[in-house]
Image (cartoon, rainbow, N blue to C red; front, side, top):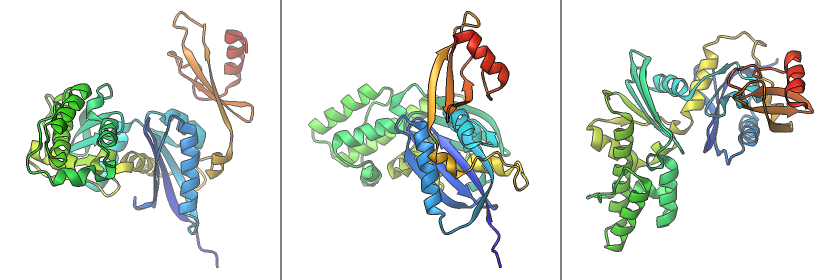
Length: 338
């Protein structure tokens, strides 16, 4: 007797630093999760991530019923895999946090190169702020400092929680923060106190940049790759004087949120646009061209697979986007002569 395939929902979050993929079951429980570095190659990261998912689920027969994509490369990812829903990171992270803590009011998220603050009331996003310009408040800066002091980033948190007197480290700018850390090392301050002082500096930077005019109310959920650092959790709890909850799958919450959004579409079997895990074996070719259709002269991105244009995007007017319609092929020839 054949055992029916298990229903699964695929979520993909492709950011500038990490690419995360999850498969959820019909109860939104995580069946498999992948966290890997993007390394500037989002297509390759997605393809390799899909292969890893297949390997993790080799003993299970999964029927993917829906696919969601988010992150800075969400549109590219959505085209490659055939996503049913493509949403921004704010929505995806809020949905995932609400799944873990249904009455969550505040979401703190710090990723590799940006950070987000999301305010929810009664399950609805009412306000948010993003910081993508200041390196001092991101995971990349923490990574850089861990390498500089010679302590693996995985051990940074354990050092911080041993501190009894955090050093004062400037938090407004990464250059000043690094100068302060070097000075504290030179005058003999304990490394635990320097690292915990750095966590305090990052938290001050985060709150000063993102929380102005916003009321941070418990329950508070802290997610993103930096949430793995116990020193950052402790520093947030010191600054806010309230408990901060870290989800089990804190580093793939964007992917979880996008999978839940796909689940909420309630697609019937066979309705998904998912192109299958075999897309991990295809060869994609990306290129750009300038559109001279108007004075904006937009740079349009074109992606091809097996010699066929899969999609174009990047123009301000949107005329190139979404699909390889015959009209677009004629327009491209007329516009750029290719």
